[in-house]
Every structure is written in C-alpha cells, then in structure tokens.
Length: 400
Ligand SMILES: Cc1cc2nc3c(=O)[nH]c(=O)nc-3n(C[C@H](O)[C@H](O)[C@H](O)COP(=O)(O)OP(=O)(O)OC[C@H]3O[C@@H](n4cnc5c(N)ncnc54)[C@H](O)[C@@H]3O)c2cc1C
Image (cartoon, rainbow, N blue to C red; front, side):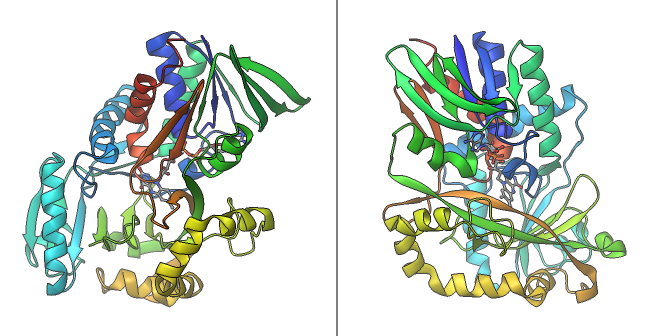
C-alpha cells in the first residue's frame, strides 16, 4: 500500500513510522516547510504530560498514558535526553484546594504513578522557592526535546524505505474510486502523486486540507497563540522542575506555568490569545483570509460571546510583561521583572465546535480513503506514538 501523510509534525511522522514498520506500507510524508516539526512540534513547552487532567475514559486520558510509556522507551532506545524532573500543581489559596483535590482524583483514576498530595511545607522540599497552600506532586512528569524526537522519527521512516518530502505544500487533492490524488508543490513546481490512502496530520493547516478534500465536518480550527517569557541567568535556579497552577476547568489550557526545558532554559507561559492568522506567531502576523474564515464559523462567534472577558484579560496579559510576572510570582515570589525576557511562542491548533465549545478530546475522522486528525492539541506531542497506533488501528485504509 502507498500511503500519503500530510504534515511532518510529531504526529504525522509517528503515524508514518507506525504504518511503515507495523504494516509494511510505503509511506510518503509531505510538509510545506523546509524542516520537520516547524510548527506546534517545534514551539511548545516540551513537557511529557503524565495524564493528570484528562477526563477518565477519554482518548486524551488513554493515549497520553500509553504515549508516555512509548515515548520514554523510544527516547531510551535512541539516546534522546528524557528527564523526569517532576511537576507540582499548586493551590495558592484555600479556595483552590477543592479544584486541586478534583484534579488529584482524576489523575489517580487515569493511573498516573507516584502521586503525592503535599502541604505548604512539603511542597518546598520539592521546589524550595515555590509557595502555596497545598500541591499535587507528579514525580514522573518529564521533559524532552520534541523536535529531536520528530527528527528521529523521520529517520526511522526513511530507514524503513519511506520518504519525507519537505517544501512540498499540498495544494489540492481528490479521492478517486481507487485512491487519492494529491497535487503537492516541490522545488520544481507542483507534482501529481497517487496514494491508496491519505492521513492528514496538518495541525493549523487541517481545515485548509479538509476543504481541499471536500470534507466540511463539525469542528473548525481556531488558532490560539501561546506566548512565553524565559528566565534570565541565575533566576533559572529558582525552578527545579515544572510548576503549574490549578487550571480553570472552563478552558482546555493549563494557565501560565513555569517549566524547565531539556536545554536548561526555564519558560514562563504560555498564555492563550486568539491569533490573527493560522500561523500568527505575533500580533504583526495578520491574514485577512484566515481571519474571515475563523470569524465566519458560528462556533467562533459563540465562543467569543461567552468568553470575551477572559479574552480581554489575556490580550492585556499578552501586551504586558507585568501580567506574566504576577502570574509567575504567585508561585515563585522571588522573581523580579528583570528576570523575565521575551522569547518565541507557539500557536495551538484548537478545534472549536459549532456550539462554541473548545473541543476537549482528540478528534480523528475517516472519510473513505482519507483519515483526518481534526483536533490534536496538548498533550498530542506526548501522546504522538499512541495516537499513531490508534489511527492505524481504526482506519480501514490498509484493508481496502
Ligand atoms: C504553546 C504550546 C505549548 C504546548 N505544550 C505542549 C507540551 O508541553 N506537551 C505536549 O505534549 N504538547 C504540547 N503542545 C501541543 C503539541 O505541540 C501539539 O499537540 C503537537 O505538536 C501536534 O503535532 P502535529 O504533528 O499534529 O502538528 P504540527 O507540529 O503543527 O505539524 C503539522 C504540520 O503540517 C504541516 N502542514 C500544514 N498544512 C500543510 C499543507 N497544506 N501541506 C503540507 N504540509 C502542511 C505544517 O507545516 C506542520 O509541519 C503545545 C502546543 C503549543 C502551541
């Protein structure tokens, strides 16, 4: 079988590897950028989530736990640094205790190992500069370099006889009775490729590829930029691992947190502001066509009507360093404005349903010979290898 995969992010590459190694498929991965992992895979917090927050029984809950095990083993096998620095979810006021307890119950139900509920003193043994009234400690939550994992997955694909074609934007596609024809542009102009099946893992480009395939669907991608500051110099020593707030259950985002990265940097962020282009990495990136499409989706209008207050607060936070500092100082009060320097952020491809709700779980649709990953936000990098197994298991692409 010849299978095409749109997107050389961590999910597309994991799917390609799984198809090549377990099904013997000939795979071709197409990406419009000149490197693998150019978008969400290369612009995230680098946290291997342990499965704390997700609704028990959901795809996220299952594929996150399975994904951690697969990823840890894969990193060990390929000597990719993987560090279990541990995570604290901190309640900073007594009012947040009940939210923390609810999260601890969920985490236990999801089978997260090694959990401990800590009081104000005990949490300082884990993070000496942190404060709070109580915390949940997940000692096995880890950090990794997701782009390095993506590069290794791409090598596996090539070693299995597949190909990863970069600078190959998919411009058009059409399903035929026997396969899928794809027009993809390479350096010498677009070429027509023919596959027996196609898997779309296009992140922020998902809706555009879905439109090419003539598959409307009931959700649309809304781009939410996540901005970060980094801690400068010695301030990095104030954070050993990962420090998170108790999240607001109304949103799928986890709130501004402090995260140590595998390269020793410590990030503060990300916030969540609606971007003005699918690949809107800054306020200057504006794409009127993207904006019109996002605004035309009734789900976006309902979402905006419901959450405009938070939206205004987040926009203020986006513009003001002060807002990041005060979010970080709630957990690590020793931080000062001079410790925070602006760094690059990422844009989340978050699906929004017609009723205005942000789709919480992973969404994977199949339409004839095309499988579409329609919602793969965090923790999809953590879960990528398990998502790949799941996609290969549920699609009938290889049975036809
Ligand atoms: C700010 C932020 C923080 C995050 N933190 C974490 C975290 O700590 N842990 C975690 O597990 N997850 C985290 N995530 C989520 C995680 O990064 C994503 O879920 C994951 O990277 C999704 O991978 P992907 O392969 O689906 O998408 P992507 O990496 O975005 O890949 C999609 C690819 O499709 C390509 N493409 C799009 N359209 C076309 C086209 N027409 N033709 C050809 N190619 C196309 C793009 O160029 C891109 O390379 C975070 C995300 C963000 C934005």
